[in-house]
Structures are given as C-alpha cells and as structure tokens.
Image 1 (cartoon, one colour):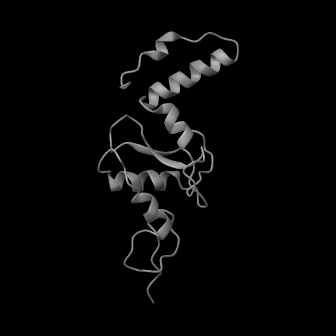
Image 2: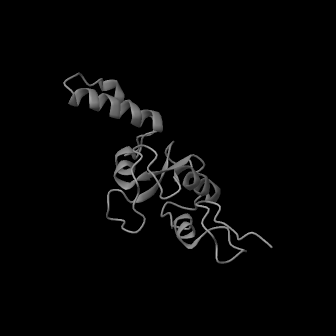
Image 3: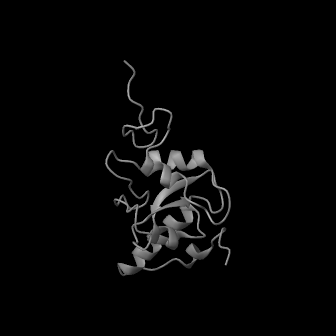
Length: 136
C-alpha cells in the first residue's frame, strides 16, 4: 500500500497525491509579489525553515505568524535578508519587515542593538546609520 503524500513544507497529508503543497502552503508560496517574479524554491526553503510543526514563526522574533489577515502586524511576509536578493529570503512578521525594509540582516541587527542600548539609558552609535542598501 502506498503512503499518503505529504506537503513538502508542513508535512500535512495531501488530498491529491500529485500535489507538492497543501492548500494553505500553496496559497502562501503563490502570493503575488508586486515587485516582480519571485523565486519559488527560495520561498519553499524559507517556509520550511519557519515551520515549527504547528505554525509558521518569525525569523527574528520567533512569534507565531498570522496567515489570513494582512492588516495584522504579525502577518506572514517574505523578507530579503539582503534587499532585492530573491534567493536569500526568510519568513517574518509584517511589522518587522516594514522596520527592516532597506537594511541587510546585519544592518538590521546592528540598528536594533544600538536602539536597545539607547532605550536602556546608553548611547546610540550613529555609525549604525551607515546603511549600504538604503534606497529612499
């Protein structure tokens, strides 16, 4: 007897043995990217990485993400770890994606650490604003 097919992302049982993704994962993988064509395999890798067995988690915060309400700050989005690089993406909350925007992963982490230091009573190193990918 043949094993039931499973989604390559979340491993849930598939109704169609010819399919690669469940309806939920297919909907996320196939989201329209208004900036152009997306890298399907990069999206699949990012979704697999963020799946915890029950839900998708934000790469930066670890928070459970919302999949069905784009107005929620925890809404699942694709983030380019290096801006405009289609092959290096992760899954993040919409609010984090908006904050990171034109920063690389390293620039974002440095900015957040300096901001946390300032909010804890320390100094903010203005060199954190030397952003290579800032395009506004």
